[in-house]
Structures are given as C-alpha cells and as structure tokens.
Length: 167
Image 1: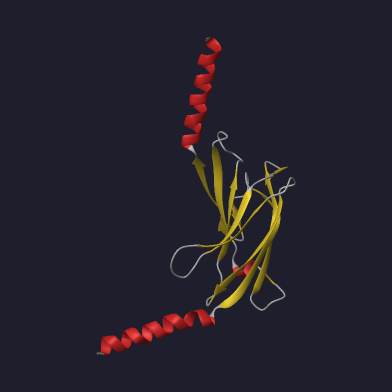
Image 2: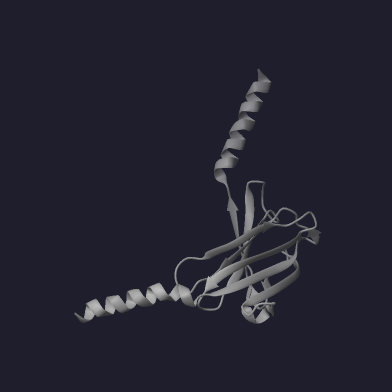
C-alpha cells in the first residue's frame, strides 16, 4: 500500500514540475574566423545541457560572409540553464568531405543579464577556431567527422569519368 501512495506522489510531482519551469532566454553573438580570415557558412547551434536526459536543441544559425552570427533561443527549465554552442565548420578539415565539430561551453557567470529575469547574453567576440583552445576557462572540444559515403561516391564518379574519357 505504501508503494501505491509513493507512486501517486511521484506522479503528482512529475506532472507538476512543468508548472514551475522558468522561461530562460539565451542570446549569443560573435564572429568566427579561421587562421585570421572570416569563416562564412559555419553552422552554429545552441544546446542546453540538462540535469537528466539528453541534450536539448535550442536553435540554429549560420555565419554570414564576414563570419558573424547572432543566435537566440528560449528554454523552459526549473533549474538554471547550462548552454553550449556546437560549431560545424571546414577549418582545418583534411578534405571537402570532412568537417570539424566544436563544443563551446557558456557558463552563466560569464553571461550578461538581459532584459528579462531569466535572460543571459554572451558575446564571444572574435573566435579563431584554428587557434583558440579555451573560452571562459573551458577547453573547446574539437572532433573531426568525415562523410565516407560521399567520398566513396565521389571517387566512383571520378573513376567512371576517367574510363569514359579513355573510350
């Protein structure tokens, strides 16, 4: 019987938690460069690292021809946000089928208070993804990803083109 009451209490608390969520507003702006040159068309995503469960996607944008970006989003959470950026770019990529994925953590203490109570803004200024290894005291994690299927198709098409030219 005690287990039954415990399950009912858990169900009530679990259902009530969304009513206590706070609307956090996140705004990040800056400029991405590669070896001192603007990095256009890089993908910039905002994610929130939750207390439990998987990462929460917030928003996506692309850098302009000058490498500049401005992105904002809203997250409804009971606890404080732990936002981070994921940047996808071709700086330092070994070929066109590869891209770099970088994680940039944005601590709340480094964010400036916004207009709303639960609002934070970050200005990462100019971030050279080729040189910068840390921001706000956190290391920037870099992974390289290559789409092997596209590379295989490209090589097959090249071979097909070479054999067509020989005939």
